[in-house]
Amino acid sequence: MNVFDILGPVMVGPSSSHTAGAVRIGQIVRRLVGGEIVRAKILLAGSFASTGAGHGTPRAIVAGLMGFMPDDERIPRSFELAAERGLTFDFGTTVLRGAHPNSAVITAENDRGERVEAGASSPGGGRIRVFELDGLPASFSGEVPTLIVRSEDRPGYVSRVTGVIAAQGINMSKLQVEREARGGRAVMVIECDQRIPYKVKMAITAIEGISKVTRLNPGEESK
Image (tube, rainbow, N blue to C red; front, top):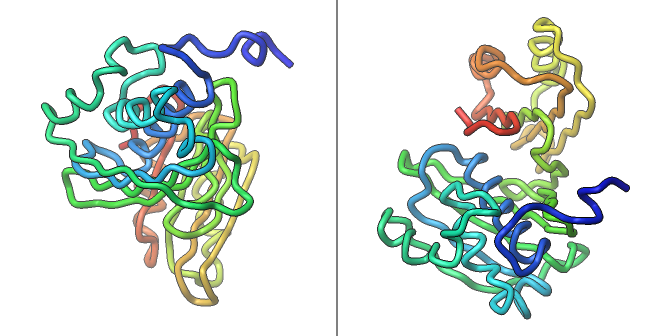
């Protein structure tokens, strides 16, 4: 346990899990889709659905979708600011079996017409974990440099992608691979020990059959 676990994050309250964590869920969705989000469908589950309104969870998620930080004093006005920016959103509820009680599933579209669907949970202390990405299981927080590679399920893809990363002297700490069916859509989530350069993303994007590469470096907007 460290001091962050005891004190929690610097934030606009009242709750680290329902407010600060909710902001970070919005932030990770923004980073996953890239660019400015113009439309979002937000489904709240568990205690997010039952008590989130009293903790400011809906406004916190929308603030995160606009890139606000958990300590941003504009969070309580996020709905009004979203309207000024042209961000439209709808809220609903869902039931997620086996997920943490503080969870949401968000479908977001950016100003280039690109979409992402992500399910994420806020277990406490302002931390989050993505558990689903575009309908496939996942498990990552975005707190360390992370590459997300969407592709067709083909032999040799894992070695080709990891070969590009290794050639740049980047150490991989965790690799996850999920697919919907043999030969169907697949997603690789690769967590690394060092910052991931833009040229790594471009080299992987150039591999035939790779549909999208997302690069998450802490403290940076995705590009």
